[in-house]
Image (cartoon, rainbow over all chains, first blue to last red; front, side, top):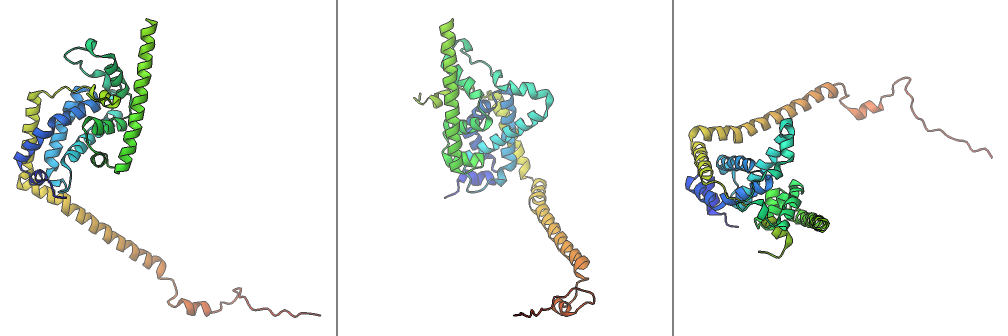
Length: 188
Length: 107
């Protein structure tokens, strides 16, 4: 496989290459971190850490690497590191547990948000981080199985299996949420 | 929008764009960091940490391994007889030695 010229330029610490990579990927990386962490200020911190790590480790990226997979892997590692520290920090345990509830409402307001979307969000929040990661990468960012596997550090087959289990888990949680919602509506 | 309920669920997740000011600030910091990485001191640091340090550690591990083998040889190997087969033939008085026993069959 021909190495990506952008990767080669990034390896040689070309700042214009960094600009190009940033312009192409910064929105996707932020969205990934925001959805993964569920907290805007955490996503912003991790976003900054991710790009500083990209600049610091740019010389170490393998020539054959897929750039998007490498960037998402850096972002994912930042998030994993954050989670580990949050679990060690007793004072942050409670805020960490409720991270997903702290997302600022969209400009239209939570009132106008559709019930289905709300159920889906709640169901997604209940998933394990491993399932969230694979769903966001494969479904949210449209990465194929080999790229997802590269980000997660597993085989493509393992990534496919994890995605399948994550989809089943999310579908079950959505269905459960919908049933609960319809029961509420009937009783009221 | 997709018909896939899972894709719909993912699409419904928050997708607020990053603040332009923050985005510009992060890019500026990343560029500064990349520029710093280009400096001679930084390159030397990378050479020391990425190349020289692992090589030195590997050399120490190998040297220590040889030393350990040498130590065991000196400690436990020195008292062993030079010629094991010759030593085995020497009959030590009082040591139980098996001799073939002839059994007479009585009719």
